[in-house]
Every structure is written in C-alpha cells, then in structure tokens.
Image (cartoon, rainbow, N blue to C red; front, side, top):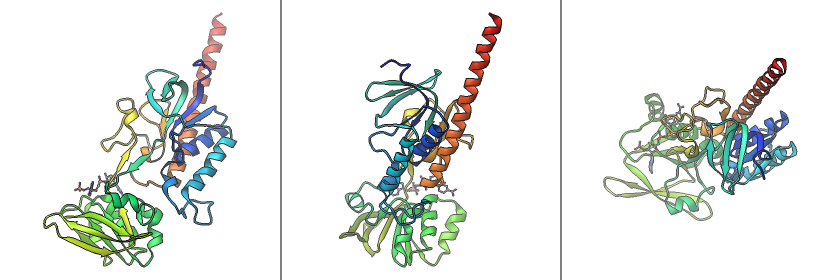
Length: 325
Ligand code: NDP
C-alpha cells in the first residue's frame, strides 16, 4: 500500500467516548476519518458494569454495551475503526504522519488525540479481585449503588476529597483513608470534609486488603506508624489516588502540562496547529464519558474547520498559479 492510499483527512488516536464521538462528527462532516482504537476499543467505560448517567440509556446499562452502540454508529456513518496501535507520531511535517504497530504509515491533514487517562490503582491483589464488585475508581459513576451503606475513599488529594463529599449524598458513612497526616486537597474542600458529620478521616492509614465474597463486604486498614490493622465493614471502596494521562507518545511533540495533561486553548486546540485533543487526556477535572464525548465533538468541529481552511488556502494557491501562467 502506498502512502497516498493511506492518507486520511482526520486521524483520531484513541477509541473511547471522546474518540468515537469525534469520529461520528468527523465522518458526518464529510471527512475521511480513521480512529485508531488500539486492541481494546471503547475506553475506560467498558470496565463499568452499570452506567446510569449516560443520556439516552434509560435502564442501567453495561458500559461495554453503550460503547458497542457508539462504535456501530461511527462505522455506519463511514468512520473506519482500526485496532492497530499507534507507536509513533510526527507532527513536524504536513500532512502529519502516524506509524502503527503493524508497520504501516498513515498521513493526515488533522489529528485528534483522545488517548484518555488511566486511573491509578493501589496494585494489591484483592483490589483487582473486587474491581466492579464494590471497588471502583469513579464515585460519580458508582456512588449511587451504595445508598444508605458505608464506603471508603482512598487518597488525600482533591479527587479523593470531592469523591468523599459526593458519596455523603448516598452513603450512610464515608471513611477517607489517607497515607499521611495531612491532606493534599485544597483548604476549602478539606474544611467541608472535616465538618461533614458523615465523614471520618483515617490519617496515616493505608488499604491493606479488600475483603468479601461475591461483592465487597469490608476492608482491612493498616496504620502506617503502629502497623495496627483495623477491620471495617462496608460495601464500597473508591480508589482516588490520581490519574495518569496517556501522553507518552506525544512527549516533546506537543505541549503537556506539569500534571501530564495535553495543554489546549479550552477549545481542543493544542500547541501544534492542526492537532486537537479531547477527553480525559486534556481534562484533569471531570473524567466523565459524557464530558469526553462532548469534547470529542468540539475537537472534530475544530478539525473540520481547520481542514476546510487548508483546502481554501490550497485552492487560492492553485488559482494564483493559474493566473501567473
Ligand atoms: P493527586 O495526585 O493530587 O492526589 C493523589 C492522592 O493520592 C495524594 O493524596 C497521594 O498521597 C495519594 N496517593 C498516591 N498514591 C498513593 C498510593 N499508592 N497509596 C495511597 N495513597 C496514594 O491526584 P488527584 O486526582 O486528587 O488530583 C489531580 C489534580 O487534579 C490535582 O492538581 C488536583 O488539584 C486537581 N483536581 C482539581 C479538582 C478541582 O479543582 N475541583 C478536582 C479534582 C482534581 P500524598 O498526598 O501522600 O502524595
């Protein structure tokens, strides 16, 4: 296959809610579009068993089913979805170049990056065993299932504190488990947490083990100074120890902020003209599929506008050449 055959108007790297929504908008906008989704298309949402906050899905629905529908929708509209992994990008040339693990090279007038951010996990075996059975990294997604029950949140940053406060809306009691004696979160949120009667903060404490049968029934919490183990009965464990945006491919190729997120102008434009970013890879705050989908749509609309301007420039140049002749 020659490089010409491998040219696309828009290439989207990442096939979660942001990438697929960008694909839907791009294909509908008339652009020859390919999404490189990697081996696991659908993004983080496919790990969630019950989604109740994605508009259009009346019943609680597995995230994988929702993303299957979105993929079908993107394909029906003419968007190609490839499971090939992107191993390298070159944004110094135009059209841009992307290289895949199957040793193919594609060129594109515009690239949308939607590679997401991975929630960090503690890495203890019982945490993996009970994932989606009471262990979660998304309070907004799963908090509702713990109405009138006890839960714990692990972490001491803004995400952990906000998750704990959010969970007080449903849960009977929320334990915040933090490994140090001081929270990292902003003063204002910490004050709100401290004064909330449903919250108990366990300082100098770490999650030692998640216990349960079919689902979580409790946790063992270790005090790091005394090594004492305390057992707590509860139904939910929310891990909020930070996120890692998937930006390693783009290091030194576009601007990335100190937390590792791609810098944008707020409307998906990155530091390289023609390269756009959408979803969790550029959003440290919301981490919601619906937000990612929205930013995917924005990135696509910006990319379409950019391509149109490119074509306009080329057309003007062609006309100028003809006049000179
Ligand atoms: P942070 O990196 O700020 O905090 C992570 C927390 O998890 C820290 O308290 C850290 O402990 C703890 N932690 C990390 N690894 C482990 C581990 N292995 N075991 C136990 N605890 C661990 O991540 P956040 O997701 O909270 O926030 C990321 C960024 O997003 C921050 O800049 C934050 O301010 C921002 N943010 C802003 C919000 C807002 O403005 N509304 C909302 C949410 C996030 P330690 O403190 O000891 O390092």
